[in-house]
Image (tube, rainbow, N blue to C red; front, side, top):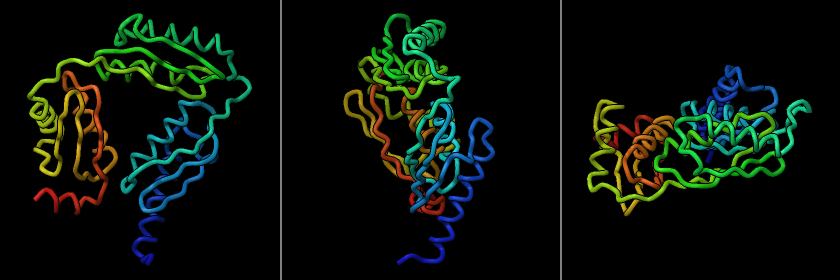
Length: 232
């Protein structure tokens, strides 16, 4: 049974997402459709670049009440933005080489029909992220397949304490409603949070732990009242 409260909540989330998109200067909100069902937001339509697609997804994720983003946005490059794959590949290689956060000669670039594939290995999550960010805004790019892996190392036995300390520094208190499980170089996060932004921040804290190569983020987004009940 669909209650009036649920209808109102769905309408509010949709309105807030549309307004957030409209307030994002790097996004043409008029070309993006928004559908909401039970906190799941579907974005449809077309954008002029991969960077605009990411900006739209990030804007929607900032809205309170959004549990997940389903992106059906299609990148349609304007005629002036079409670049040959060879030109995109050269620009990508140069962008990677100029970024001091990215270890040299460990990431390879392949481009096909405007879609960049990154392959190789790095030591840290921030290096993987830096490589992605270095190429995703290049002219003519329709999308990026990030196949860069984090090189496994021996994970510290104090990984849970490391993550909890990071959360305490960022949130000012221990997250009693979050459980941290480790297995080899894998970390699994479970529990409930009040927003997608908090969910992402907790995952970032896990990635700062030396030796972590995989983070399974199983945190669910619920209302703030539900989080408070679980935290007691």
